[in-house]
Image (cartoon, rainbow over all chains, first blue to last red; front, top):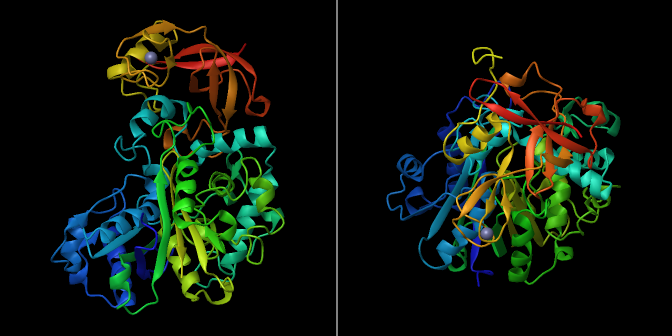
Length: 387
Length: 137
Ligand SMILES: [Zn+2]
């Protein structure tokens, strides 16, 4: 059992931007976040002996060489796209709990605005994601070429089966934007949004409008995991990993032929994580839900068990996922209004909330928080953290 | 249409994918069916995920199905589809039980409906590649 065996002891992130771009290389911007995480934890780079880079965004060897990690002995990358950083919480916890590594660094980041744009790169490389060859042979000839289009198929079917509405998708966008107004580092800080603005934004891939889509961003973050014993001697109050799990939909590499169309990796992972943590979803004080698009928030709230499948639309309405609502979601503004840093920003925000460092957007008395990740064709990951 | 003028992405035409599209070029929509348990499958796979049998055959589909879900791409995110937008990728659930990602040839996006009966309608886009589009049944 992995419960309470490992902690997150350091976090770091860079400023996020669109124009004019970070001015750093893809490796450089991640190193900036990694160095910040080391300083936050009070660790030297030479103490880091495990590194878990994001898929296709740099090799552990390069991180170790740059940082001066002279004793790298655990290096792994989880092929789960945006689900990778949160899935890496579990893998890193396994490594430190078993003594395979002492301190594991998980970095992620990119020049997602000024460099390669996600919408252009996801499937042009036949090895970019596990399903890329299937996409090349069976989706791309028909113009299904990018993530909003893949997931729009799920959103449309959900609207048909459960009556989920455009306004409910909009409620997700509005909640994220509202939280961003309380976060000076968010890209959409100072740019409030109304439902009328949302409904007037141009269609991208029906039912997704422009404002259903996350903001392509330059930015990076990193966090450090160590054992409970080692955590006690460090600078920060440790954040305990109560439960963690990751899972794949079936089939994971093909999106149209799923026996249960809305079942994702999270459907399997969430009950495992909650069982491990010994809590139920209602015990969470907040959740950071991977929000590449608005419907994915509704879908993950359902699949994680915060509500039943089909009830996610009602769950997010009327301030349900806003600060002060029944479950504050993405208190930093999420991928939709803070920045698209590949889901690692959700982990960093969860740690800030549990440390009580979230400023104006602090969830009062936050003790337990949930983080999810979503990637590729519906890979899922979840971590349940406590202070 | 000649190969020179068609600029949209094409299947790689290798392995099982080539076999699937070669049948399309002959005007036949065929899916793999397990010879052991009879389960149809799509996209093509090496073995049967129901019973792990390696024995299978290409079986001709009725070509009939219903629309399972769809999206309308209003803003193309791939340069080759820039002029095509708005267009609608559609998932069709076939009578055989498998689902196929395709497009309709005769249905404006605003008339798409989940459950609409449809029928395969092949479209030769190059000398080598014929794609299984669909039309209203
Ligand atoms: Zn079989």
